[in-house]
Image 1 (cartoon, one colour):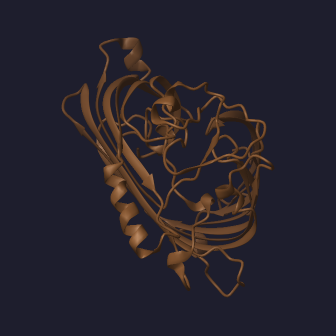
Image 2 (cartoon, rainbow, N blue to C red):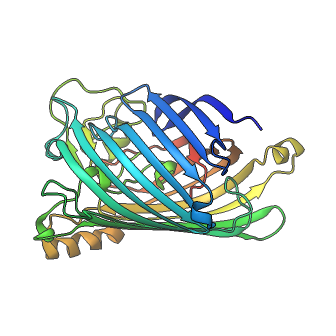
Length: 381
């Protein structure tokens, strides 16, 4: 088998198109080891450079060990007027359904000059990240792209601020739980049920008065982020962008009222979307295959669905404020229904839906009617 593999391609994530290239060396030491150099560049300001080394059987066990050195820049200028720069190292240990990892890196958030809101601007500057993460994943679906039966559960817990590394260090605890169940009613019809919930909070002295970083919060909006009928990351707390040239965006429309949010031109995005510390989303669909050999061969399925979700802030509000905000998670729940098509591709699942939004809040970026998206492989909602 060829020891060297080259790859080049394009992909779209979060509304940003990117090109990527990688080179991989296999079995250099005769231990089924692998070494990979990756590079990617987005048409906005995102970029990724990473070098990794993988050892499938660590110290004679069934565990897989990986070391990574990375330098990433993730652009969030479309919805939140900042770029997240992160460089560092990480170590991963995987076995069966479990993965434990540690990351040590320097994060530098750079808000867009003259445009970012005051709420985003306060996160400007570098901070040290020292985080320990544990993930449990069990996937019993018949397909990760377009399942017709089975279930999957994923739990991710993270604590940042590990070790005596100084004052300017990120300190938070974060947990997210996601699940999917697919119940076949016949050879052609299935019921799909999905849910996801998460919470993130700061820890340490006077934690009730501290706020989490925008880069560690949860976002909703768009099929990729668990809420169809809304634009990418276009749900939840916002703040007004400062005066200046308004960036163009194919994704969104800012507004001062809920109705105007859906009617203003798409390139008039005037608010930053800040995410939240507590999120909940749910999705239920009746899916079916079509009585057409061509569509069956492509694994195209139809779906009729209902989708609900919300995200709210908790940190920095004090104990009483946290309770009040948590109650709004249910009272301000967004709701969408729709019909659509799904079909798997090599990078995930394509969805083409017609959405009707029944419940929304002021400043939400609504996407009524047709909505096209590519959900990454392994998604659970």
